[in-house]
Image 1 (cartoon, rainbow, N blue to C red):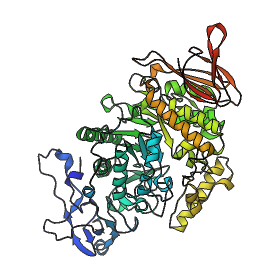
Image 2 (image 1 turned 30 degrees about the vertical axis):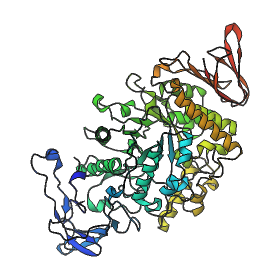
Image 3 (image 1 turned 30 degrees about the horizontal axis):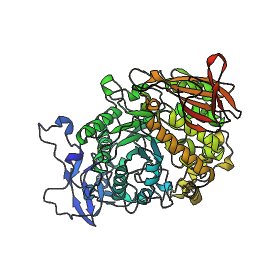
Image 4 (image 1 turned 90 degrees about the vertical axis):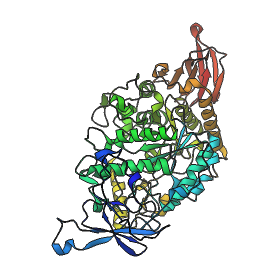
Length: 624
């Protein structure tokens, strides 16, 4: 069912309310139960609007931009007769588009059609062959707004990225937040500039040839400002890591699923978003025959057909199950792509040598070898960290490498470290360029985390600004206890509530032009351009991926044979060790070196072979 097309301006879903009053600019207007759609409507019986309230046809309500909220009468089976006749406080709209004074206050109307789009030439981009750039609006620039982010889009265009992926922007309580404490999914938080600024940002991206992916959280809500349970059964018994379970399959869940699907369609139609990153989909407990992810995938595909743009979905999933990206027609979930944590873990250990926590499973260079060829390292293997076997093998005939989104840094892997330190805090410029080479030449879809491209020295820490003292204190204590249990020094864990934790996490835009930062940035630009120019690097077939490595010498070679129409393959030569090495190379000593980091040379080896001399932490991309 698509409720968007059948909603009037102030309609609200409150199936358990005895009465509903909408207060608009201080005046109360009684609402009435909404009629069902006519029999024979295209949506059929599933489109009945049971539980919806609307204003009578003759209601005299103001037009234009107004503040409003709802007063809900108690349910028939709740309390005494006298209590049932009483009404609750004024509540914000669950589908509010604006909350100018915060998530606890009145909602504000917003007309998305008022924006005059300038992206008519934008025909979209596919995820295949693209480079993604993840950013958090509040810390991307000193101003921390969508409009100030527009001022840095030329940097991203020159860098060569194809998509920006925005961390969640919907309304949260407090002045700033990571983004994962949102409570009003239809809003754009006012601290970022609100919904009109979001439209301007997407428009500006498209005019520069950059697509926009929106990170959405449908598995939980934040701890402050969540009024949904007062309106309907949005939650069900049980909990996940982050709180109450969203009611996707229990009593009254039809309306909850509509709430999610209509939100997806809102981003696509009203804000011209090109794709989604769906947060922690393994926490979506849904036992229906048709999973909510399948419905989202089919909706996105349908809107893409209507708009003529290649819209897509990317799931964050730690299930290591290729059915996530198998089409719904083949009994899969239908996601276009999914995050591949195994690549991050293998690459992180190879670059840093860290093996604590879940990195213990990836201590050997052989794990990177397997990930390069098979995507999942855990494909039914024993996971020491989990204490059990995990995952299943990828069906290489059904899915393609580009469907896996990979990174060497992201908001989770940086922000969930005790001190929020980036790998640039402990690696040399040579190692950072080595990491860039690993990321931007591997077979999967690479994603950068903001500032990574110049080896930013600023951390990206976990920050909150909960106005409730008790909630802020609980979060700070919980954070320290969590890292103490993992063996981290508590003294290194910054207070999430301290204003300095947020301020310290903002990028320093004076860095990209200085010293080693400029060198790292130049390498990222060169490698992104190379990825676009060399078709072998983005060949969409698992069968074309070949690897060689030496565990003790710490060299690694990724081989990609000649693409159709080309006479030469490409090899990526990597040295993860602190000593110079001689790595076998499948070409001639006079092969063309397309990219090099350090003093790399090709020479004849024994038996007519060729070897590549790689300096410590050196890298090269070579045609053969």
